[in-house]
Length: 507
Image 1 (cartoon, one colour):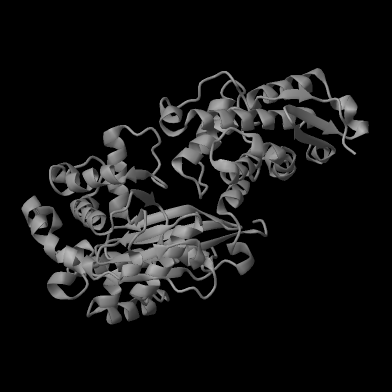
Image 2 (cartoon, rainbow, N blue to C red; image 1 turned 135 degrees about the vertical axis):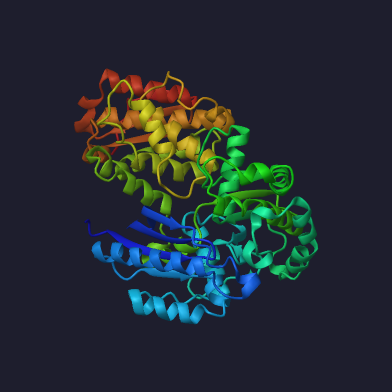
């Protein structure tokens, strides 16, 4: 294993599920390489008995025994454990925690509600520190609400957040699948009263970030119902109107459909109407202009908390692209010098995501520029497009993900339409498509002029002078300016609305 790559295990013990996730860590980027979940329902009986579910304890005990064997056999360090609301409040939780320690050596002592909110906030920021708004993490027995902004990643900053007893098992309890729309409607006054006591520091935010399996499943169903072209949940964004419609449908007209939705286990499906009701009440309480689904939260916050301080400020997207390109000799070392070579173009790209966004996406594309060289040439462009579209990299909106995929697609072809019909039209403006074409053509120029040789890139330079795009080179490299290089420079200049020029040399 490379020195800068390591693995770490996280055990997340919630009120509904018990999960083991093993992450590969590469710089500030971490990717789940193994993910196993048991729907134990530990907190299912909390409202009725004040104790953990007996069947849930049995399932949890068996899962933790299995997880401990996997961790030991992989020679991983002791796992990070996030045990949450059910083990905080159940009367018999201390005895259960002690028995698990004796049986497996795992300390599953629960974290506080405030700490859970803090770690969920860090998890949200770990993959994208541009996030700003309210985070809402819905578990089986609790709802954590926290303010999200980049300042939380600094040492010593205290999260502004609360943990509320508003998970379905604590707020309602019993057999959720037997509840009618009328039963849910009767709960609205008590839910609203609880949310009304939320501190004012959470007011006035535009974006509501949703964390938790119930909301993720609800979002996946929404994508299916509207035939959304990009079936990935991380960063899935709904307008306030669409979020409100989905939320209300989930606990009213859609309730019966959700309980029998194909592919959903009953233990998960029965929580979805309540997830819709809670989303509706949150929309009423905070009036955000958009809702964004997050696949990261508490577990990722636990991992991010372990990173060295010098790593925490790195861009997880760039480290993720570097990680994704590992093993591709053509990509690993070519990215940084290619990015330096192409940086002068940033201010002249069409209005895609602004200069800052374009710069970040250009850097990401450069790190991925060698993908596909080992694939069949007749299908290379399409395969690279889909690889990048679904790559396990963080810090991208759906539009940015489509943009990055299109940029890499255009490094292989300028004429073919991209795969996944309707996706580009749905997610990218005309200017963004043009900017992606420019980046693709610029990468092709860098490859052609140097024969994909990293050390040669330092001898060439791009420069925009008025209405001309100049390709500069050291005098002893002029012989490398072939007809093919002229052709590629001309194609790029035309896309940028400039005139190509290779007459000058750099000092």
